[in-house]
Structure formats: C-alpha cells, structure tokens
Image (cartoon, rainbow, N blue to C red; front, side):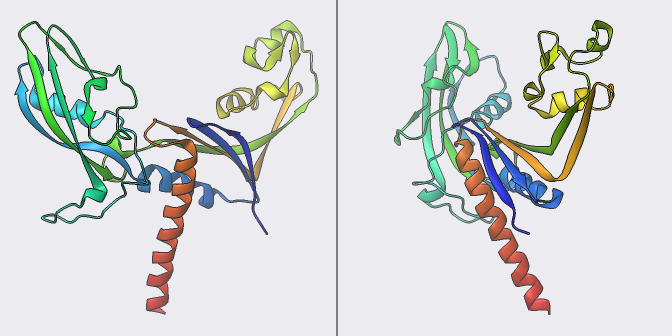
Length: 259
C-alpha cells in the first residue's frame, strides 16, 4: 500500500500535512526525528567580560542559551564532536554583545560577523541594567540536536488521527448546544469545517452522538509542525525525513551485519 501525502497548510512558521495509509509508528518516528535529530544553532559557551547586572552569571548564560538564533544550512551543519575534539567552522559561529545601563539589554544587540545569523526575536530581554551596570560577552553558538538539550529543539511537532464527522442534528436546541464548544457553530448551526484541530475534535467526541458523531481513522493522520523561528517549517519536515532515513539506513546496516 502506497502512502498518500497532502499538504493542507504551509508557511515559514507552520505546516500541516495529511498522511493517509500511514501508521502510528511512522508519524511518531517522524515527530521524534524532528524534535530530537534536526540540528539548529544555539549559544553553548559564553565568555563574560563585564557582568555587573543583578543576575547570577549562570542564570544569564542559561537565558542566552535559550535565545533562538536563525540557522543557515548553506553554511552550518551538525558535527558529532567527541569530548576533547575541536569543532570546525562548519558547526560553530561567534557572537558578541555590549550593553550599558540604564535600560533593558535585548537580544537584538547580539552581533555576528555572519549577517545570516541573528536572534529570531530581537526584543527578547536578557536583563534590566541600572545606570552603572554593564554587560559585555563573547558567545559561541554551535549546531546541536534536541536529544542533547531543549535549546536545540527547532519547534513543535505533533500529530493526531484524522476524524470524519456525521451530523445527525445540525441545529440542536440551546441546552444541547451548551454541551459543545461554541467554536463549532455558525450561529446556531453546526459547521464541521470549524472542527479543524485536535483540541476541538477531543472536545466534541462522545458529547452527544445523536447530534454529532465522530469517527477516527486509524490509518490517516494530521501532522503539524510549528517552528520556533530558527529554521522554517519546511526545513523541519525536509530535514526530519532526511534524519529518519539516515537512522533507518544505520539500523539496516546493523541488522544486515548480524544476519
């Protein structure tokens, strides 16, 4: 049986794909590949040169690490560096920062020699500086994977079974309508096209089957990704498939070597 794929929604931030004739194992493997294996840049080392803010150094470094940075696969990619080994320029980049109070030190102040690398959210605050306080540091951002730390997770990946709806009473009386979420109604009439996400499907399922019946499809799944901004939703999917294919190739090699 050949799996069918249909793109329902796509933009840089979010994508929704329908997989038909698929399995729970397949979509869950893709979800895990995206969140665990797709590499992005994140600050990993910080050299504080001036730090007179009220925050402890460790708290500030943690905030820096969780600052989403744009990632350019044309220039940077993941390296599986062992302890004691040197990273190449392919998997790391330097950023600098200088700020003086009074005022808030925002992420937009991060400077990188590569203009493709910058904070996704420029107005993300690092710390509030008083009049005589300063913050100056050099940071090294490295390519990493979500399986090692959450700062390298590129976004959200989720899936749910596609549902078919059978409306037995499109205009239920008021006391029955109150049992259902108001989002599914167009005035007083049920509009199944508005039941377009997993939360609403769960909210209407089993409420009153004499009004609205929900039937889940065990081999059809709605798969959604939402990017944190480091890479696009398309890159999350494309790279997720590539990482899953690579892992399956390694697994096949291991199995073949034992047989």
